[in-house]
Length: 304
Length: 306
Image 1 (cartoon, chains in turn brown, orange):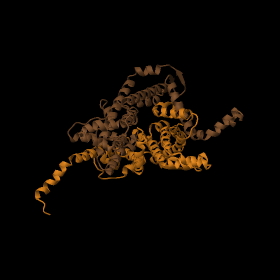
Image 2 (tube, rainbow over the protein chains, first blue to last red):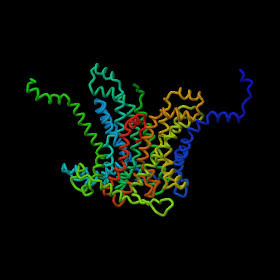
Image 3 (cartoon, each protein chain N blue to C red):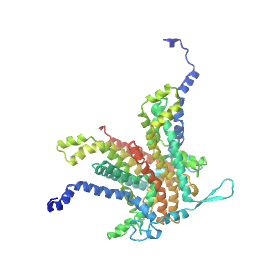
Image 4 (tube, one colour):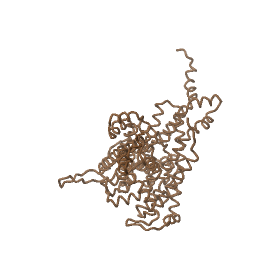
């Protein structure tokens, strides 16, 4: 081979060759990666450090685990956790169930009608939660709200939906679960549409009824979709903020404070950045653990 | 026709019973759909109802005396922005709501455009090009997908304060540009494109930039459309970050402005408040009907957020 006689390239030549070969690749990723390092990677690292400091606008001092210990001793923190869990659990169960039921009801309809229903269920999702929450405040209005009007129609006493600390959190949950999530309907509907017909035909030959077909064919084949939706709905549930901020701002008497609402208050009302970072890290840990558990329980190798 | 009278009377009923499951499905579906759409309906119903008719019982279930008064009123009570006219001492007085509308449109359009360019470049590089470090960098992007945005809220605020970008559009836009979902989506899509065209163009001496703009981008149009639509929706509706960065009411976006009106003097005048909210919602509704196909596609390739 003639390479035997080729001179060994110098380091300079190697770098030059490397640069010549890869410069376009690095050019293509540069803008995104620079933004990524400045506005995601660096702040995440900083959030971890802040969580162990006492910080205000001037600077920080190391305080070890004090922020976490303070949170552990804080009643507000634990009640916020509780509110967030209640909210997340209810919306995940309600959204998965309702979107699955709606998708299976849509399934037998002709294609254009299916598309119409999918659009109808998706439409409310494009509007901002701020706008939706403003409407709900009005629906929940004690004197002239639509809900209390419905209650008076059937002769029930009025309810202080957002003003009663025992009820406010449930009103916020209600405002969320009453709306069937368009994403779930669309994804379940697509997944059901792609289940091969002969699976059902084979089951019918064997004498399976509707329920058996649902339990033994449809549900198992929907598992990947259920996993995906459960994970994103759980994440969305734990991150609830706008609804609470607009409808109750955490009140009355902190009965609707959620974790993100608490992070917001700690950071931008109390300017306790260290403690807010500690709260954010706890939120991150909860979301990570939930996602892992869900993957473990719901993942399958189903392919069809 | 010589059909016996008996059949004529019972046939519809018999058909109804035979079709009961199908009929019931429609009843249930329509009821559930109407419930889901109710807040949206109530938004427009209230916005179009004269202010005096919103505070009465029973409420008007349809806008009986529909009026645009609330829209005119909210323009007044949102305040007036005084925009200096360059080269003169005059100021241009504009209802704040218009300014919020403009701010939101500007921020959303600019961010979406920047996103499309940066994400498609990075997506292309990660999908089609082999270069040292690509695996580790892409793994970092995947990891970042799992980090809730609230984690970076405080450090970003401190950064923006340090850089003196509080109360500027740059402060709102810049951190928002770092979003990894677009890179991920476009990489997944570009990966499925055949490599022959790219290779052929390279043989013909096309530059790498030409290959990206003339071959990759046109083939990626469907995924770009999906990315753009979800990005625009996200920026249009975004709340917490603009709320933190913007303090001057003239700089607000619509969402922040609405929250501002809500906490102000007219916060419980629901006709006004919801007229403003309707104005913020209408562009997204139009947007949805215009690009419905892409919304549905986007969901299926996992572009869903929340």
